Image 1 (cartoon, one colour):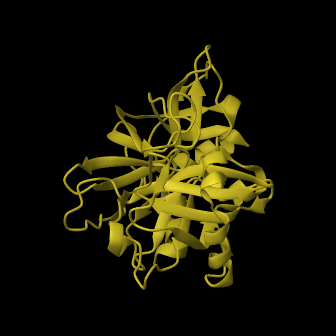
Image 2 (cartoon, helix red, strand yellow):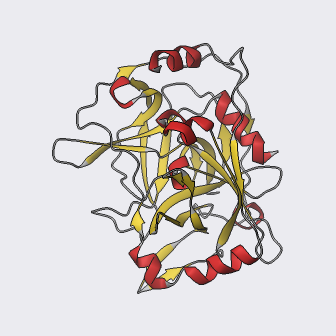
Image 3 (cartoon, rainbow, N blue to C red):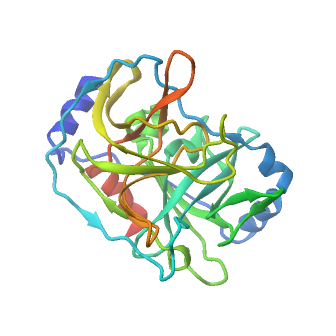
Length: 306
C-alpha cells in the first residue's frame, strides 16, 4: 500500500479521480458563543500540546524525488504596517474530554477567511474536535493570554479521506474557515500567507509554531530556518514528507512552513504544515516533517478557498 502511494505521487496529477474531501460545518451563532465562554484562562493554561505520532529515534530516511506537476501559486496578502507574523497564531480545542493546543496560519483566499493547519489539530479519535479557536499573534505575558487581533472560531473544515480513515501521515493537513469578527474577515485584519504547491525537494524555508513542550511553554511563536529535503520513511507509513533539521515539538503542530518569508510584511509562501517530530536517542526533537503539498492539497484548498 505504501509503494502504491509513492508511485502515484511520482507521476504528478492522477489519471483516476481523487476521493472527495471530508468536510464539517460548525454553527457560527450559538456554538460560537459557547466556545468563547468555554476558554477561561485556567483552561488555556491546562491545555496539552497536541503532538502527532512520533517518528522513530533513528528513522530510515530514503530520499525521494519531486513529482512532476503543474505549479499553482497563491499570492500573499500583506497588510500595511505588518512587521511581525501576526497571521500565525495558536489554536485551542477539545478532543475526547481533554483540551489541547496547536498552531495555524491564515492563508490568502477569495473569502479572506481561510487557515491552514494539521489534520490532527481538527480530527482525531474518529471525531471532529470541539471548542476550536484561533488566536492570531497570540502571546502569554505576565499572567495574561494576549489576543491582539481577536479570537476566531471555526466555521468549516476540510480534510482528506485518508486521514479520516487511517490517519495516513501523508495527508496530515487541513483547511479551516473562520467566522467574521466585528464584521471583518480575518485576512483583512492580519494578512495571509501565499501558497506554493508542488515545490522542489531542496528549498530554503522557515517553520513557525507555538511549541509547548520543554524547553518551551507555548507562550510565544518560535521559528527555525532550514533547507529541506523530501524523504520516504516506509517504517512510518510515509511515502513523501518534507524534512527539516529543526527542534519544534508538541504544540507547534499545524504551524506553517514558509518559503520566501519577509520580515517587512510578515508574509511569504506556505510550502508545508508542521506534522511530525523526530527524536534522537535522548528523546530530544531533532527533525520536523510536513506532508508534501501537491495536487491533492491544492484540490482540498479549493474546497474552501475558492
